[in-house]
Amino acid sequence: MTVKLIGITGGSGSGKSTVVKRIEQASPECLLIAQDNYYKSAPEVTNETITSVNFDQPGAFDMDLMLDNLDDLKNGRPTMMPQYDFKTHSRKAEFVRLEPKKLIIVDGLMVLYDERIRNLLDLKIYVETPPDIRFIRRLKRDIVERGRTMESVIEQYMNVVRPGHYNFVEPTKEFADLIIPEGGYNENAMKVLFSFVESVTRSL
Image (cartoon, rainbow, N blue to C red; front, side, top):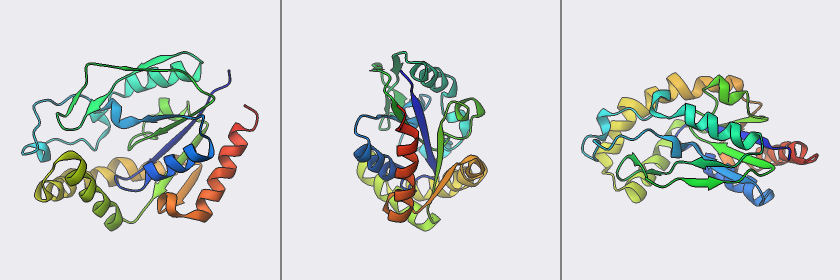
């Protein structure tokens, strides 16, 4: 089986997940992989001390395991993907078995950072969204879904998320084959993306 990988990156709150959902609707047989599952465990972190830990830099992710998993799938082999618990800031004990599919979508902050992973991707996408919109989305998500306080989200954003974006995420835009302004709500850009997806998958 020929397997094609599409990597999607962009800043926190840029709308990567919306783009992924739109692709999934267009190609329901695809396999979705979130880079968030590859965060390294930091069980000592609490919601009170989280601002002292930088999760927005390459070293926060287990890139080697992610590379191994993607290489397995790319070569038609099943693999075991870790699971991450954002409330305990640690990797769960159980892994999820992934079976290779013809189209695999990988999204996350550092998807385009590691050259080894970039070399596995057949299509590289960068989602570009204004920083104020990204911050508001992140604020809402962390409070509602992760039990954070507004003060800790703001402190973390200013101390690590914002500098991490400009140091590590935004520079990877130069590697993108396609840049999507404002994420999945940009209908014109999504039409272009769908044509890319169709061209990538046409021969599968």
